[in-house]
Amino acid sequence: MKKLILLSLLPLVFGISTTQAKKKNAQPNVILIFIDDEGYGDVGCYGATGFQTPHLDQMANEGMRFTNFYAAQPVCSASRAGLMPGCYPKRIGISMALMPSHKTGLNAKEYTMAEMFQDQSYATACYGKWHLGSKHDFFPLQHGFDEYFGLPYSNDMWPRTNETGELVSEKKWRSKYPELPLMEGNEMLKTITTLEEQNDLTTLYTERSVDFINRHVDEPFFLYVPHTMGHVPLGVSDKFRGKSEQGLYGDVMMEIDWSVGEILKAVEENKLSDNTIVVFTTDNGPWLNYGNHAGSAGALREGKLTTWEGGQRVPCIIKWPGQVPEGKVCNKLACAIDLLPTFAALTGG
Image 1 (tube, rainbow, N blue to C red):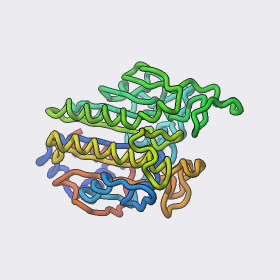
Image 2 (cartoon, rainbow, N blue to C red):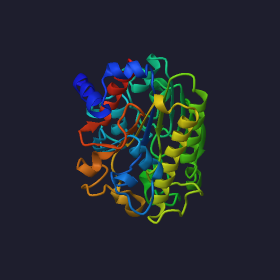
Image 3 (cartoon, rainbow, N blue to C red):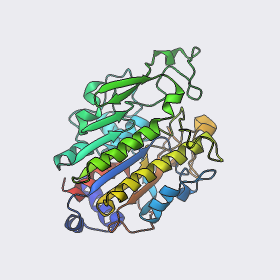
Image 4 (cartoon, one colour):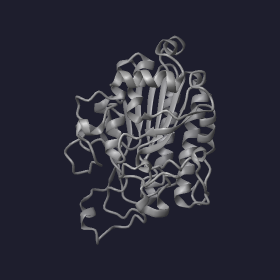
């Protein structure tokens, strides 16, 4: 099955064969930007209203935009369980959002894309939300990443409300959550106890990503940036707060777009553009229960937690100058589980 998927993605999506890619780019860098709960209609070139995403729109103009790209599942952990090992999430026993108290996670026997890159002598890093298990054995460093910084699970899994950050007394089940741990490698740097502290997450992940690119100019690298936002509770820095017509969610999307721009700028300034594949997509559709704190699936039906189109059909943009045709729209069916075998073919994994 994977071989069939792999053979279909390379010529139809990238417009090249494995042999052609290897001749031109023996070991291309790969950057995978993975947004949380961003819907099909939350990017300018997909029809977003009330805010602008100029960097993503430019990325689409310089690369390929997908109109039939699907997340592996319409919920956080399961979606990532499909992305990392490149298989259907149910096959490896993860079909929901893992809680901090769960004793299960991504099995060590699963071969992740990070491990595939490590086997090809790539430097690897993950900055953002992991959500594939909250115990030591399940953390990113045990699954192929050299570096990790971020939250081990969703930012609403704490003893507070989703919107105001206040302590919750009426919801007894929420009081069982620990405070949010901010991780560095396998260790907890600190706990996040206020909503204000979450405002800095997008900036912190972006700064780490730019630094990683700057440090690995002379060797191939794989950078995975699974942003915490726009999962509730929404957090945004002062530089974007109040900037959109749509409201707080629009502010968050504008900061995500800024982050993409900073990462692309670092690639360009280091003269790595021609040898770097950049992929932007999301884990599932918008969490519509949260009204104006949620995104939009555009004209698609429903959102997160459903298998209607709005739950799993998501934005996807791929840029690779000289390899991916510029300004193209791909209507072919593709899925997050296709990325690992495609990366493997392009890098010799």
